[in-house]
Image 1 (tube, rainbow over the protein chains, first blue to last red):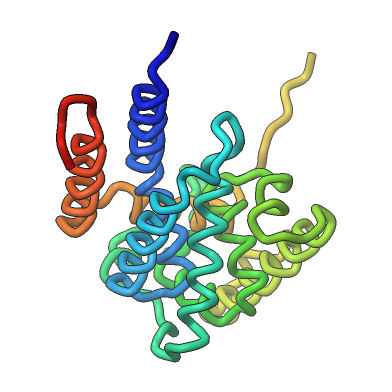
Image 2: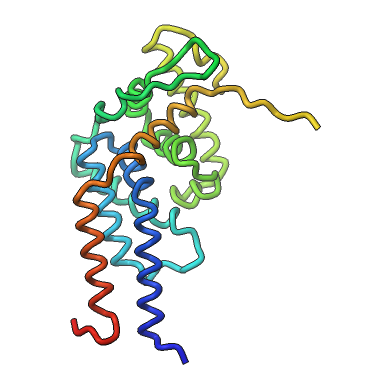
Length: 180
Length: 51
């Protein structure tokens, strides 16, 4: 017969390993949400601690990433209500990166995208970050945010269009005419 | 069978780059300390260890 304490220990170890693997995504999602590096890392750590404390309520085999993103997102909205400093993206990382199509003459600075993201409504920004940046599926995003898949799709489309418009306006060219 | 060609989408590429830029950063010490705390909690409940 299996010792229950050994099972708990093994479950805790698996949970810990999943948490470690998710840290880069948690940091990235938090950075995009709040736009401020130190606060984003605090947010990600807070979500990790809350997730660990609530690990007994996580059902093994279900979507760990969605579960953790949900915790982080809830914590973000709780925090932002108390703190109005979360407004601008940390330019240190973004300004080092340039996105360019291999065979195209145009390029956009990721810093422009990061700044533009912070100007979008939070409901559009979070969908762009989940689906566009983190590669989360519509279904997963729907679970994380707690709304219908159709709502996710429409927020994504509106967010992409708004983001393209903001960047297009900032750069003064017409890179994004085709973006729906 | 024809292969679909996906046009370069600068918005999607930029969003992915944003993610990669953060994800590829070295993990800050605060996170390592947090993991050490978790490891200590796990070790403390191992059979034979007293809390």
